[in-house]
Structures are given as structure tokens and as C-alpha cells.
Image (cartoon, rainbow, N blue to C red; front, top):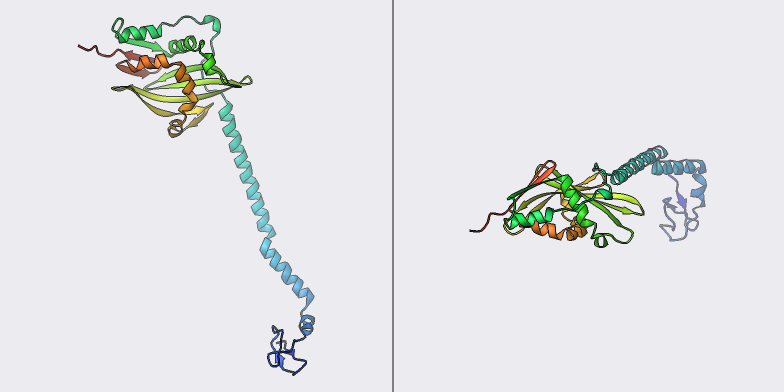
Length: 250
């Protein structure tokens, strides 16, 4: 063991001491430094640095990080593509083929028991009615930099899917909501079955808060909404909807 000899009292001190344990004089530590190999110190330092940074492990971590970035980037791109792609919808009909729709009058006659007690419409007839009604309400549907194009209804067994096409600078994007509807004692009971942006599906829980997307459409179709709420039964079937008038009060 290396000893530090005190220059004042010649007492042997441990190598880690700075002052003499016997007399308190400051010790000369240059002897200790001269006995430690610089080469050995350098090797020890390099070993500690290698253990700290581990070049091989660091390279593996960098590779994993690059792969994760690539996967996340691919996933984000796939989501964006699904949001941009249009859903499967019937082609938009020409404006020249638009006629007058009597659907609202039929509903009023059924409610007042002046017409058939049961009405049946295909999704094509409903979409024609949408076009007829909404063409006069574009001012409330168009927003700055956001133009309303059309609303499309598609009927399935027990549900209806409403898709709205809007455009920004000529580029169309689509939002859809799927709903199950039944007429209750006072008003329709609507439950969400989910929805989508483009072709990207969203959970029904998210669509519970997504009603604001269709708020302008529901306002434009307020008359139709009011008439439907007065019907006795509403049934959705593939490609058609059946509306039954309420039972007359005796």
C-alpha cells in the first residue's frame, strides 16, 4: 500500500489523506500521482465510457427508434389516406333531373289521416327529397371556405346512415353517421351506431359528441324532422324506410 510520509513529523499516512493524521501538516501528494500509471488511467476511463454509452447497444436502440418512426409514419399515412378516400356512394345526379318532391305533403296527410296510413320510400327517393329541400337552403349550409355539396341517406336493417359531402377549395371530404331510430312517446329515440370520416370508421362513443358535424343539416331539415316525430312507427330496411301513421285518437 502506498503511504504518504509527513515532511514535518515523518508519520506514515493513508494515501487518501490530505493533512497529516499526526501533526496536521499538509501532505505532499505528488508522490501518489507519480506512482499511478497514466496508461492504466486512460484504459479505465475508456472502459467506463464504453460501459456508459455502449456503442453496440446504442446502435441497436437507434435502429429500433428508426423502425418505430417508420411504423408510426406508415400508420399516420394510412389513417390520412382512409380519411381522404370517399366512401361508396351513388354518383351525384345531375341538377337537370331534379323534380318537385311531395314527400313532406304525404307525411302531413298521413299524420292527419287524409292519406295512406303507411308510407314507404326508397333511399333514392329520400335522397331526391334531400336535394329538392336543401337546394333552397344553401345559405345556411355553406360556411366560409366550406361548401356544402350534398347529403345522402342509405338504409340498412334497423339503421340509417347519413353522409354529408363538403368541399374545401374544390376538394371533397365526407363525414358519415349511422343511427338507429325509433319513435317514442314524445320524440324519436336516436342511438348512434358509429360513423366515419372518409372511409375511416369511428366508434359510436365518439359520434355521440359528433352531432355538431350535422347540426346545420338537421336545422335545414327541421320540417321533415318534425313530421317524422309525429309518425307512429318508423322502420328501416335495406334500401327503404317504412313510416306508419299514428293511431287516430277516438
